[in-house]
Length: 353
Image 1 (cartoon, rainbow, N blue to C red):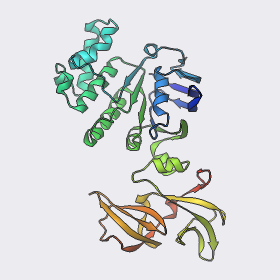
Image 2: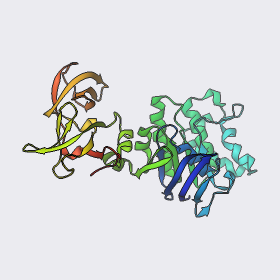
Image 3: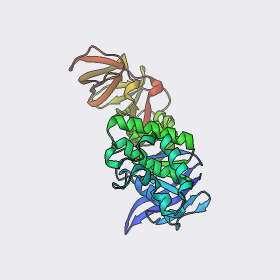
Image 4: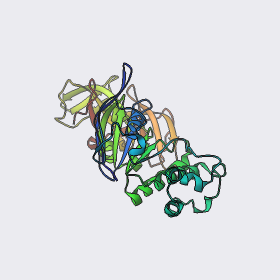
C-alpha cells in the first residue's frame, strides 16, 4: 500500500494552465474521491498520478518515493477506466491474466490470484466466457479483477461507472466500496457524480476550474460547505440560495430579499446592512412558519416529494417525506430552522459562519 502526496502540482498545455497548484495528502489505505464538473481538472490530476500526463510543476510522492519522472509501470498502480478496455477475443480468465503474462510470471504463481479475485468479484462461473457474453456490470468486474491481480499499492478509478445504467451504478458502488474494505489499498477515484462521492469516499476533494475548493469527510462537506460552489455542487436536489440584505428591527434580524420576502436569521452572525447569500437544503425546510411560498411544480418520487415554487422572486425547492395535499398555484408558509441556515459572502462566495 502507499500514501500519496501532491505538493504544488500544476499542469500547463502551452500557455494554458489547467491545474493550479494542487496540494493533497492521501493516507495509506484511504479512499479519496476527486469530484467536480466536467473540465475541472480532476482527470488530469489522476493522469499525472498515473504517469499518463507529464507534471508541469510541483512534486508527486507515492509511497515515500518522488514519482514525477517514474514511468507508469514503476509506480505500482492499477487503473480502471470508464471504458472497460477488455480484449474482445480473450476469455475473462485471459483478460485478467494478461498483465501477469506480459510480466512473464509463472501461471502456477498467478492462477491462484486470479481464482481468488474471481471469487471475490463473483466471476468464478464466467472465466471461460468472452466479454461480449457479459453484462456491463460483469465487464466492469473483469476490469477490476485485472487491477486486483496486479496487487498494486494504489488503485486509480477514472469514472468507472459512467457507462452503466442507474441500477448497476448503485450495485457497483457497493461492490467497489466492499472491495476496498477487504483489500485496504489506497484508492483515488474520479467522478462528476456527487452521489458516488458522498456514498463511497473516506474524504472528498471538490475541484473547480483546476483548483481544490474544499477537502473533507462527506458529511462534513455536506453539513458545512466552505463556499457557494461546494454548497451548490453537493446535494440533490441542490441547496436553495437567495440573495438579500440583512436588516435588524424590533422583530429581530432577518434577510430581506428582492421582492420584500423576509427570512429570519440567527442574531449576531452578520451585521445589519450586509449583502449576503442565504443557503438552505430542501430537506431542512419545514411546512408551517413565517415565510410565504407559492407552489409551482410538484414532483412525487415515491420516497419523497419535491415542491418547486417561489419565495418572493426566488425559485426554491422543498423536499418532504410526507405526501402533501397541495396543488400548483397554492400558497403555503414555510419554516426555515435557524440551525440549518448557511450564510455566504455574496461577493467572494466564502462561508460566513
